Image (cartoon, rainbow, N blue to C red):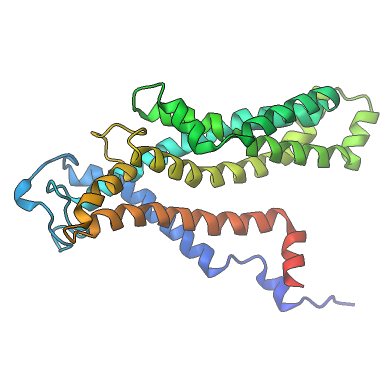
Length: 286
């Protein structure tokens, strides 16, 4: 007897249109960030007071700032720096949090309780205030922001990994490996890590826009990237003075360059999360 497949089952493997659009936005931004500064061959700090405060036009699609610098080109340079800082900071957070979460879940007992109390203590601290305290100890630089994000955002990765390890420890294949005499190292390497990699990748991707927002906030406060580097946070801070003169594009453009990748990553990771957890998708459909 031939099984009848529902239309929903046939469509479940196809990504929604919003996810495809989000992926196209990320690809377009990535290519623009890499290629446009190389092709343009323009100094993004070039000052031309004769072109200061120009509205959007074919020559300057997003206008110029109060010093005559092209806003679009500076946004692309700023987004490139933000992407780099966000990716490195996210990887550092996932590495630290993933190792501690794996140790807590795999060791259990006293080690689990001690490590999770450390996680709870760090998570209870306000991230932004702790980040300000960390970057204030260093000169403004990308590495100071990376350290700030890495130190303050690893706790979520630790909780995710620990929760997944505790879930996997109760699976029959793990219990069978332990009963068969497999060492703890072999169980972690052969049975736990392969199942943790997709969740760690998802958490890392989710952390990138969060790290970008953190870097933007610190740069807006004057504690992140140095002023001579094109930063989206620095641009928004500089654009506040232009708002009184009606130059709205100086602040709106960098804000959109922050919002677009954040929304795109959110849509993609939501679809990714549903793929990893089919039970959640079925519960939402009821």
